[in-house]
View (cartoon, rainbow, N blue to C red):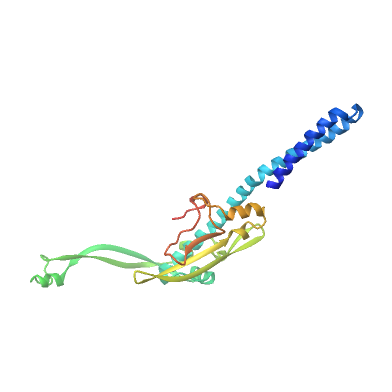
Length: 251
């Protein structure tokens, strides 16, 4: 884009010089033809200026459209992984496992009720009859399983988009999504973690590469920093992404 701007400036200066030469040396009979040529040159310069101004604007619009699609895919992955963890107590390390989980497994519908019951052990410790209603009570939670609902109906009702969690489609091109899962230790406790990534270079491969290179170096709270769109982490127990809220929820 810098080269285009430099070229536009040089052409504008050259045109100005030609006009001066025409005014000074060109015979009157040749001026109409040259005038037409200069008009065409002026139109070309105007178009180049317009294109140089619009290129980053159009890049930004297309980039944001693609980022929204990519983030939507990440949010589906997060939904599936959180459901998987609810049942299996860890995260899936492949998209095949997520698809099988969504298609074949169920969530339990749970009822939780807080209540108070006689604290027999404390009653005995204080010399009170174990079943005395006049003694001590303790709070407990009663959990009942009311039934089950399929994972698919719970997370992706009336949609089969979960079958394509591993790719983001841009036109006729499919950009792969990578997925890893592991565990870390925090306060002597094993904590499951996962990370999903989409390569921004692949997502923007058919756009202006000078602008893509600038995009990879961006550092802003309003943009996606780095050359990857990332969800989760293998080093920290987080399930958020590196995108700002304008591209999608990040809670």
